[in-house]
Image (cartoon, rainbow, N blue to C red):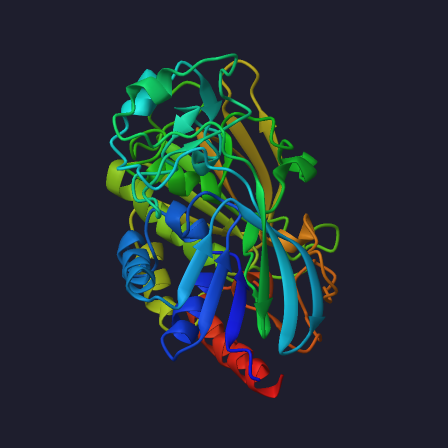
Length: 415
């Protein structure tokens, strides 16, 4: 018998796309996501390029498709523990950790209001805090609160449960194991920003006013840690000059050998964030090459023609922090003028490369990886989708995930 079911590991834009495309032609799909919400990195983006529109519109369309399709079942706070079998007949063990909140939750927030404990907020990259019982973000799907057991006050504290009028809090929940039988597996675990602590010449993550491009997205978002205001993390002051440094950890044999493809456009986009808030700010972009292919070339031309935006061909070699002012001096060679530059900035944004999630956490089944940790599966019935295969922008990830859905369907037929 044909096993018309597919497991999708990862609930970001690639995983969601794979799931809805397969489910809408009649296949049973299971999504396993380690976070308490679906949407992945796209949910953390402020705006898409080049149209500069918010990502929640596209995510909401996919969430509606999931809600309306009985062929899709998803498990949040879950991870694959074991896989056995072969193409057409895989047995998968999934561990689902407790949310401590049941389906009675309406998202009212009364429990969080009464919670006495706090935790660092990973959705905003630790730039702010939430209560121990929290909603992952205001557009979260599912729209349910979750309790962080490591941050919870414990010791008999029931303030959140006492505040809930819907009996939605269940502190007795335990982890459970779910067994699934599927015909194909799609790995869509996405990417992480390259670890800046490995970039000692850029401060190794120790300089307060050196941030990554992913942090910049959250800072510019109205639901971010600064309510959309781009300021210096060290003192909260407005900025008058800012530097964007391309290829931070990318195209480097000592770090990520590949080009992450999206960083140039991301920095150009973020320059527009700065220009909107600070019309007179000085913006400098240090680059090796500006890679804006096809339709993105028009966006590049528009941004580079703006007043007070300077593009400097030359990779920044070193950053130095002033211990008193926390200003950052960028040292770089301007290859066009063949001069060594030393310029001081209020804020520096590193365009860190896209490292696959599998570079840090290997999958619990046999699969091939390339030198940077990207999935290069040659196992029949198991496929990578989106940024876990190679760096991609959102549009490319959606296209790749659609193609991967077809491959997975073909595996269930062959099996």
